[in-house]
Length: 242
Image 1 (cartoon, helix red, strand yellow):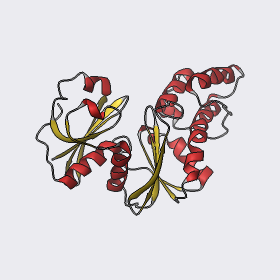
Image 2 (tube, helix red, strand yellow):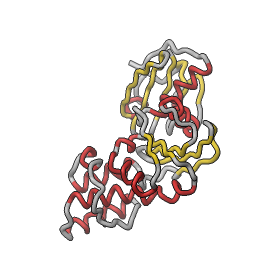
Image 3 (tube, rainbow, N blue to C red):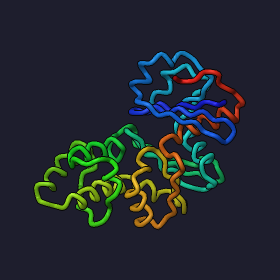
């Protein structure tokens, strides 16, 4: 059994790999941090809180997410787009090897936190947010604080809720578009919790004309990459997170 852990800003993903079979657990990071499970285990870890655990090996997030994408897909030439709770990563991969990458340096603009905040303003679920991308209302600000004020103004103007939601999704796309266009891949592998947003997937496909591949489990991709790396190293774990 090989173990990988991705300690993100909002959630911690834990993956056990046995052959090609995966067992996955997701829990709030604050619950994980204050648990008694952090002392030591033969795991490979990554993520925002990777240094809070005494792992066998710590690897950078970029490497973990690329390894996860390579394990979960049959694509070897792609741009990896990973959007999590507090940041995003864009990585250019050729023949399975990292060539270049960009990150947003822990800013919530265009991330899962941004979408959650806009969903609160609109009083809708994240599932509802993921449904709409047609007839978007233009939102000029991508900053979470200013976008909230602007969204409230658009609500007061009487725009349909579906168009407001579409505008929120398009604002995420506008935030990442310049970085996606920098790398000339024909395929984008989309990971992270935001990859579950089908509307943003469709916006990227339509606006950029690229193939968008969403792995079976985009949210656990980093932890999967860590477990895959542990397997490559041949280091098995005897400790399980309860």
